[in-house]
Image (tube, helix red, strand yellow):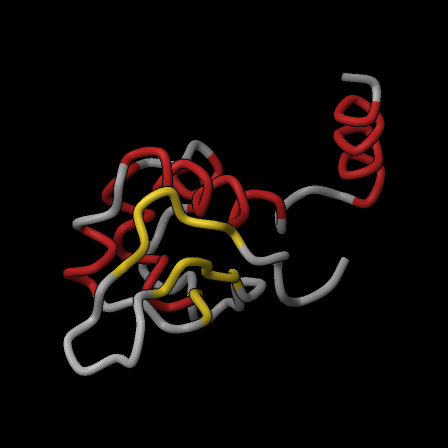
Length: 104
């Protein structure tokens, strides 16, 4: 598995003051131990909202600001959180998910 997720297209682009244009897509870097410092892995895996709002600014590319993550559309928060959790799957689990998605 790569250390950067595929870009997650946001349903509501993020407008940052001073940026040339809104962010329409965000990628997730594979969380390191440092990025996970102070967080409970069980809360990361269950996509606890408070935990994700802490973690996402540490692992997004481009780096989202805490205020931007707090203002995310719920659908975008779920999509980004799902991308984070994907890094915690074993290769066998990832293959199962890909096979299930291919059969849809």
